[in-house]
Length: 218
Image (cartoon, rainbow, N blue to C red; front, side, top):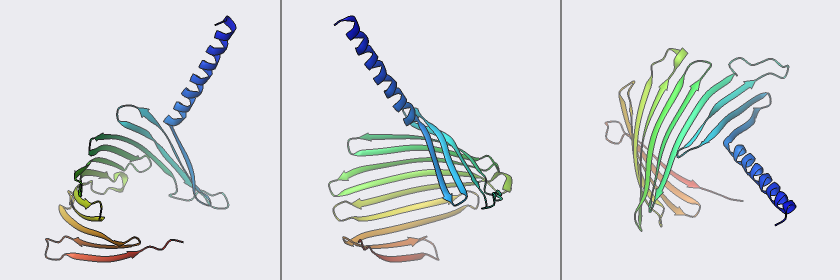
């Protein structure tokens, strides 16, 4: 290969690498401006980190105004956030671990979320899902109590019929209140679904709800 051919080849290779690095850099940046109302705007700015866990962090900024240019009271938004997700798949099992944090920089409130879920195929006719989560909410300047909510859920589904039964329980530390829900779902036709839910079925005052959902497409 001649000297000029080598120079040309190296130049093309360098250009391709530069474009690839620029594309990778753009993939790592998060930029999402949204107009949520005629004079109200919200922007999400952040970045992703190429690590074993899918990690991202950033800030949500927002501001609203009137047609005359006056800023609306309580329309300001400045929230710092971070998120780390670990998705794993092995044979017939898919698992996820997630940590999320949000802090309102204007009033000092915040939220911490810890979650873990697992989906797996028990047999050809049965799928199963379990999940656990912990939510910690701090209200900051509003001088309210910090609330901690622990949730655990399990669901069983029959793939070929669409039948599913799920049960979940919530325990709130602030009020020491426990609640539970059981849900049954069954497709009756391609556009007709039946569902029944029961809240606190083991208490003296359970409540229930039965629904038929019919969908029309045109």
